[in-house]
Length: 97
Image 1: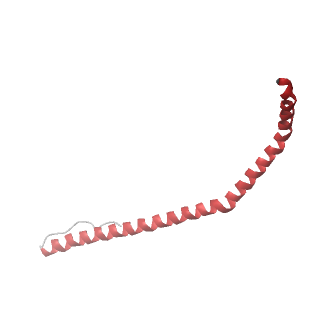
Image 2: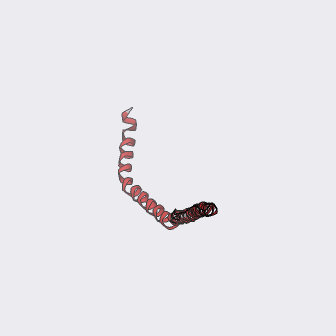
Image 3: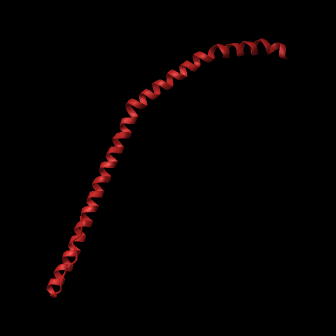
């Protein structure tokens, strides 16, 4: 049995050794092309989405912060007006925003 396929096995091994370097080069070339395409098209889209997310987060944070500041000032002013209405001294410092 070995005699029948021995030459084929040796030939296959030799062919594999001869083709290893070119196939490896083709793989390197394909990966280089792939990475170039990712760098050119995919990464800018990802970065754009990150920037949009940051901008949206900052905007929402500012809206929340302003709403909280407004609420703090309104509560402070209600207490001030109520104290004045009752003739009490109001020495609470205003909110710091």
